[in-house]
Amino acid sequence: MPLARLLLCFLQCSLAAAVLLPVVAGAANLPEASQRYASDTRDAAPSDSATPHELKAGIERLRTGTWWEANRKIRPELAQVGDLMFLLPLADRQLEPSSDAIGRVQRLREALRGHLMREPAGWTRLVAQVRAERAKAGDASAVLLADALINEVRYRDGTDGSYYAPARFFAESGVCKDFAVAKYLLLRDAGFDIERLRLVSLAPRYNNTPDDWHVILVVRIDGAGEPLALDSPSPPGAKRAADSANEASASSGPSALLSAILAGREPADAVLRAPAGPLATPLSRSGQARRPLATVFNELGSRSFERAAPGAPRRASAAGRSANANPKYVDEMGESWTVDGSGTFPKWRVAVDQADAPAKPGPAARLIRVAAR
Image 1: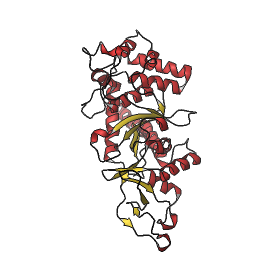
Image 2: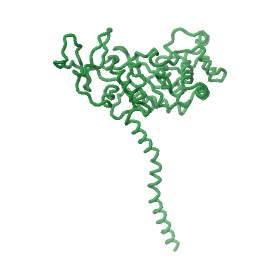
Image 3: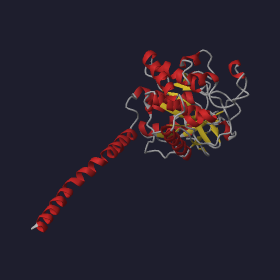
Image 4: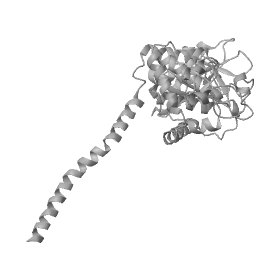
């Protein structure tokens, strides 16, 4: 009899498991499925906040702007892209991301993982003061403060190419990419939506060395006419008097002022009295406005704005032939280009002679073809 009851209990438990396990498994997978759905939705179309007018204006800037050629790639100027970097989705499945873009996203995610494991001493104080400034004076004021705070870390060249988490950056200093990552993470921790944050990889205008690449942070602010560019200090040159006394004992890490802020001896807004580096400024007025833009990215993904330089000249139609007409070149996607002859170095513009251009697809396809590779 006890054996019969034991067998009956076993059968009942097996039946319950058969019914409940699929439900539990489905519930466990729900966040992952929801995340995939959100990702699919995000990849499918331009930003929800984008309007047809904004998209059209952004594409028109690219079609009428200057594209710089270096190392057989052409790239538009940063100011020409403008808010288009926020209107187009990151990680668009219709586009093949470049290896450079993939690598940058991976390095940013590694820095984020390192930051979640360890923060620099006093970091929470910076976050709290940026958050308080945002509540008191708005997003633009908070961005200005965050930019000035991070620019108080000393510049040090010769890093290993990885993206430093703030703990390592504050200890060892770094270069432009490390300043940009620290600003990104400070604003992120202070409550800014990462959809409004873009790290921007800027390429050289000419066939120069890889050292001419530059990374900055760009932030979209509600109500602002254009995004804000957060640049980093230049390599060491003239020293401020406040830092001269400490130069012998400290050539890396935070300045004396930032150290005092991290320790709670000075308020965060003390950095605004004599900023150590360039202040956050509208994109078109920043010192990088005319630099060629290669890639924009954050932890969600990337979008490349570079494409292969146009190849051989394309024969013009009889109606389009003219003794004074600029020769037209066609790129790998069938887009027609003309050479911009102004200046010494090669530049390109999208051909505007529609009678002599190949048939164009619909607006959405043209957007992808021109705006990204």
